Image 1 (spheres, rainbow, N blue to C red):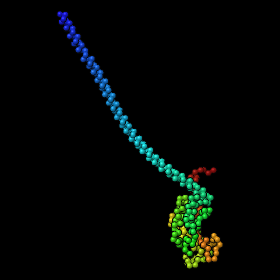
Image 2: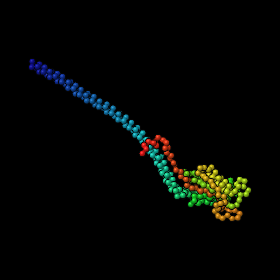
Image 3: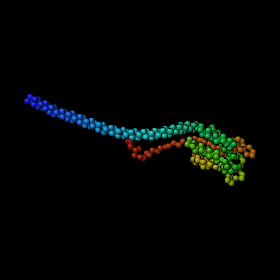
Length: 275
């Protein structure tokens, strides 16, 4: 009897123990499952956040590349504007110096140098007077006797002079072309040139036309002829080559003042009451 009771208690104890183990394991398993689900959710959230960050990073990199391209473009524009600014500043400085020179009746230094170089390249035909801004062409080498037709080879020095006169720095200048002769009367070409005065003017016109053809603004050029009346030296018997010449003067252009006329008949003129 006692033995049976002992066996019964032992069996009950075993059964009771066996019933508790599955319940505890189940609770731990569920807890682990909950932890696992939480970790899975956190991992999913982290992956989604990472994907969003990567997309943001790609977008920011694209924006950065676009910004760099825009900076490069703006830098290029800035460099171009800086170059233009430097060019304009130099030109303005040059024009300011030229204007100062014109105010006192002098030619700009660079123009003087260029004209002097032309004269130096044609010493027999051309001389340069910097004080008066004047180039002097020998008529004997520029024209045939009694003619107003330019000799072959005269085009080059006149074209060189024209390139200087027509440059932007020469715009404020006027060009005066003056012809001169000696006192020997015109003979074989008298029909075309009735007098030395006519011949001197016609030669000045020929030089003027050559300058205009080479690019000088026609409105800048005036012509005159003094015939034999303004010799460089006293005329001698048989003719005087020094007095047969064409002179090109570069002089400051006259300034024009803008006059603003007020229309006193407009209503505005009567807005203020009489006093």
